[in-house]
Length: 77
Image (tube, rainbow, N blue to C red):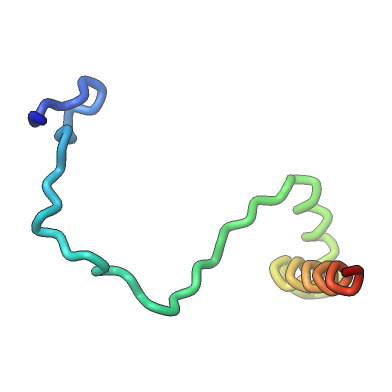
């Protein structure tokens, strides 16, 4: 393969040489990944209002609700 570039992406070569790279350089065993969760606008507004009324963060309220749902699911098994 040559080093021709895609006409739509002129600043990147078609092939990149990773032979000098270090495998696993940024890997951290046991690291946790916090996933972003995107809520429907109406759901977010509702939860934000409920959280404000209770004086807690939306994240705390959502975690409480999810934990209760998990308990219900497990109890129904």
